[in-house]
Length: 464
Image (cartoon, rainbow, N blue to C red; front, side):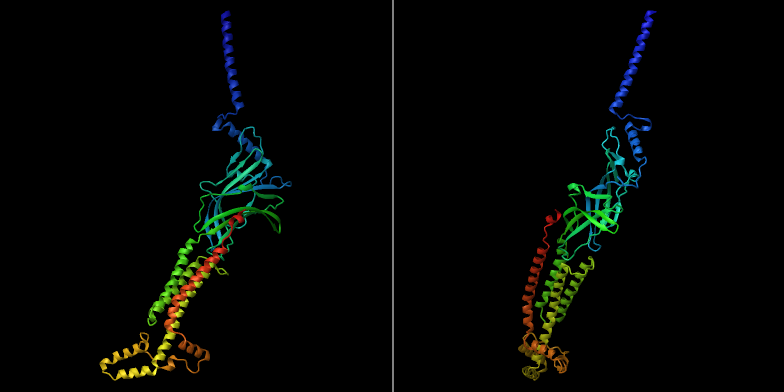
């Protein structure tokens, strides 16, 4: 009997020990905060976070800013630009892709951090339930949120009530470009931002120290190079009050290589081609006229194609000066032929009216009919070498048709007499072969030296 009582006591003691050991393990697990699975797949941490969010949103009014009626909200801005392009001179705009981040403090969202978490990382669904700054871009023309596969935005809440709101945007702002030095210009494009509803009494915008703007090192633009960027704060005064603004500055330098290959070199070659007419005999009128008109029309087409991709401006661009001067050189080559042709015609007419010319022709007519053509050709060579050519269909002997009449002005008579007695057609061609290239070379030197000097800007001084 006594042994049975002792056995029952030992069995009861063993059961009590096992039960106490299980309770001790349970309390230990709770003290260490291990994430134990609960009903429905939830964990203890998830349950605690859900309870925190529910408590934070109780009586939370998203229509009121933090510290309403008290101190202003300080919003710190930073952005990471990972793509930049589509700089349009015609529309005067550019496009950037960026991660736009805003940081501020909302004491209403502070919570107890006993659960040992650094912050609450939430999606855009939570953003719609909280107050966020109504920041907008002043010079924005188009923008869009990225929503594939879901809306690209997040919000993080720290235990002390500090918030980080980040979203991915594509923005196309306007950029007032100065194309006076195009295509050797440098453009200063800006991105302005401020609050729409809150003045500086409610919201103050600041950049995040020196890291307000960061850019991907691999950004490249088709016709531009990113020279530098800067950020600054600004105050704007409107009818409804003063507003805090932030400005991002981007400095873009145009790459001239494209325009050298597509515009400057072809225009120069067209000018050089127009000088070929100086070596063509002035008697070859169709060849010289066709060459002159072709070069003029080709350069006109080139000028039209260049300006078709640019806005209609009220001032002259650097490339316009170059194309206009090339056009003048080509047109001057065509005018030179007109001058040579006219003065040569006057000289030919004068030689035909010379008595010695008549005497030679009459003596040639006394020969046999078979030798008449040869004698006339011989007479022409004697008088004019290779410059005078008789055409059976011309009327050079008709003074009333080709020479100025008595009723014409004295100025015209003076010019005609001057060209008849002073200007030598062949000498004009010889001088043009040297004068035109020399003047074009001088223009090239002056053009490039001037514009390379005025467009040499120290960008580092601007981005400090």
